Image (cartoon, rainbow, N blue to C red; front, side, top):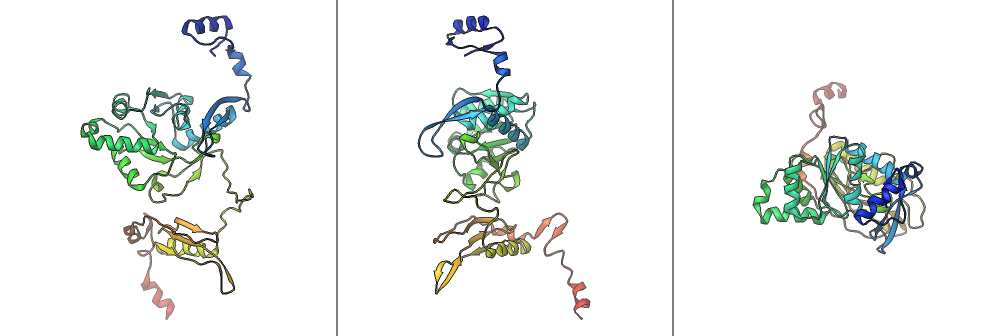
Amino acid sequence: MLTSDHPATARAVAEQVGIDTKRVVRGSDLDNLGEADLHRLMYSSGTTAHPKGVPITYGNFYWKTIGHVAEFGISAADRTAMAGPMYHVGAFDLPGISTWWVGGSLVILPRFDVPDLLATIDRTRPTNVWLAPAMVNAVLNAITQSPELAGFSTASIRFITGGGEKMPVTLIERLLATFPNARFADAYGLTETVSGDTFLDRDSIVAKLGSVGRACLHLEVAVWDEEGRPVPAGERPCDVVRVQADACVNGVFIAVADRCRAERGVSWVGGTVIVGPDGYPLAGPVTSDDPAVLVACCDLARARNKQVSKHNDVIADRRPLLYRPVAS
């Protein structure tokens, strides 16, 4: 298929380069396409473990593109290095074509090769790249084994998108050390939704590791139970809410091992959770009637800093001298 305003011209060019000319789509045909029309067919097995074709509509692609542009502040000044396979939404859409849509440029590598990728980044100065966890591992291991690769500059990269599986915090820290000016954004999403549905902000990628983050612009996220019924937003045992509040107010880590199931005639709601000093759950809460083991990385040094912001400090803001006259 080749697009042209005149079918005869398109057909002639297509024949010369060996493209099938059974169907030629003209510019006027493209103008008549709507949001419900098929943009492309992607193949995936990530959601159901069974390979399937995923139809992506123009509307799906268009609105997700806007969401990614808003999330990362993409402009015509940006350049995306496409190091992954084009049949994967990671390379094609994170941000991929979004950069092109706002007038930026693309650097398309023929295959993923670490030395070639690093040399290309040094030479062409892209501002972003998508790297799956396996690709991140390959980059970091290659630099460790061949220190000369560290000589290539990665300073132009301002954000890296990932996805496909959870990234360990140690890997994220090594990646950010290798790309010192970059924000790492671990994308959660489906091929069916052009991926990149939720992201953690730059400051939360390590502190709130394990969270999927917030939904991007023009996207609604819902949680359903096993029966396919929507679960009320924020539903959790009151005990968990109290723990989150206590952890946040006092700036401490709190680990709660709560009961579940029925014991001595009492039905327990559960609520096992590990909460960080900002009140954000690091693991859990477990709200099912099943035993569970929670594990979280807790940097206890964070609990020593009681500063909520540069103008507020949980401990320093207390004025005990003012309390005495009131008490007396």
